[in-house]
Image 1 (cartoon, rainbow, N blue to C red):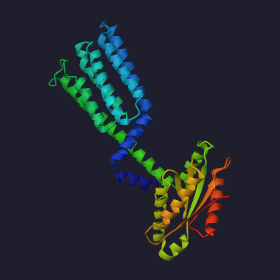
Image 2 (tube, rainbow, N blue to C red):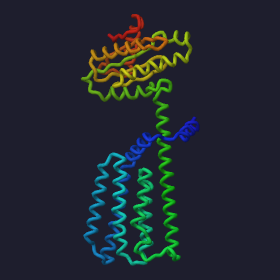
Image 3 (cartoon, rainbow, N blue to C red):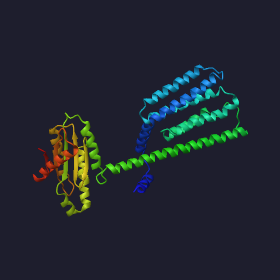
Image 4 (cartoon, one colour):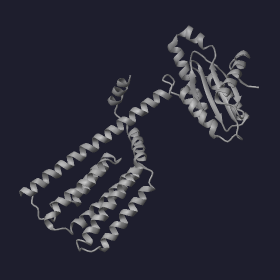
Amino acid sequence: MLRTLEEQVLKQAAPAALKNEFAQHDFERLHGFCILTYMASLSIWLTFDLIVSFPGQQGFTFYSMVFLASLLITTIVLSFTHRARHFQWINLLFVLIIAVAVRLVIEGLPMDLHPVWLILGASSILYSASVMPLRRWSFFITVVITWSVLNPFWMTGTSITELKGLIVLAYALFLTALTLYSFITLRQARLYNYLMSKLLLEQAYVDALTGIPNRRAFMASAGRRLKAQPREHEHYLAMVDIDNFKKVNDAYGHEIGDDVLKRIATDIKGVMVDFDYARLGGEEFAIYLAHVAREEVEALAARLCQVVREQPTRPAATISIGLARIEDGDSLNQALAKADQALYQSKHAGKDRYSFHP
């Protein structure tokens, strides 16, 4: 079963909307890690800057204060950022600032050390970026910014025609290829895992035939509502059953019966869009109506019966509804039992109607 699901996920190309959903989920999950990475990067840069400034006798300049303030502000802005698309631009700004700041520190070192330290600085930035929740375009721009600012051949006296220059170039290309591969592979793995978990959740909590929540999902969501809602507000539970459904299956076949189930589910979804609803199994559905008055419940039940009854499709179908007010101390199972008793009253009173539990 798991192998079948894996093959199903791998064959599907994720649509743009799902990729955006994944990007937001990935950013929310790694938000704290991103802040920690920024703080670590800032601390490492500040440590090297202080070493060059004081033991290296270069002096802690005004530019150092500007870069330190800029990096701090960017980190603080990130801590208040909650949208993945905003993070992409914040990260590009942080990469630009810290790359220039690293270049500033390296300028204080002896000239023959510049290429090595520029490569080291670039590798640190690219590695950090490769494990962050970035979009592909954002990571590619990060690579361009990093090598544009930390170019080991710019103002270093190193020529690409020399042996030293060839070694530096080979390492730079290897580093770029490695980080690109790591980023793409990790991002693809996270996207794959997200799609797998989403598919498994859908199969666990969505009814495969009708596309609405199943019993497991209803018991979880209705249970949360029952505990969360203030008890001064009224809660009602509705049980819905399709009238004479066995006769429909016997007369028209199970395929037509499945069409009737899907049609009723669509009607419930349309009328009860603001509430929790589910297919409990067979031809039974349940609806949890929270924070409503009895008059509104009556209007909704009557409307649902009318919508189902007046569907122009064939075979014609009607439903019976049992309604129960959830009293203080009632559990969800107790409320379901009371609604089921009210449903029994509707069935024996002629069907195609709703009844309240006494």
